[in-house]
Length: 86
Image (cartoon, rainbow, N blue to C red; front, side, top):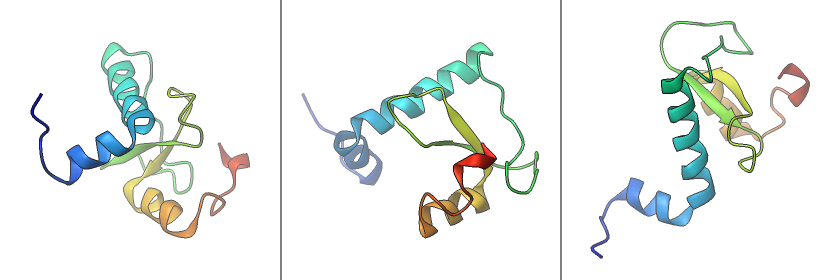
């Protein structure tokens, strides 16, 4: 088996549970089982809205965040906005 090279391929190999959770969200969105919500922080509905996992063992339990707030959450730590907002 030939392993692809690159940052994304390396990340997938190093983080299989996270990768499979991302794949599950994409598939659920395609099937209509999940519907993107607004950013739970600012309410934004346009542009890039990301699914954020608090627990990758529950792949379809996500919080919807705009790209800006998702990046802020990861930069500042998981408690930036608190889980009560979910």
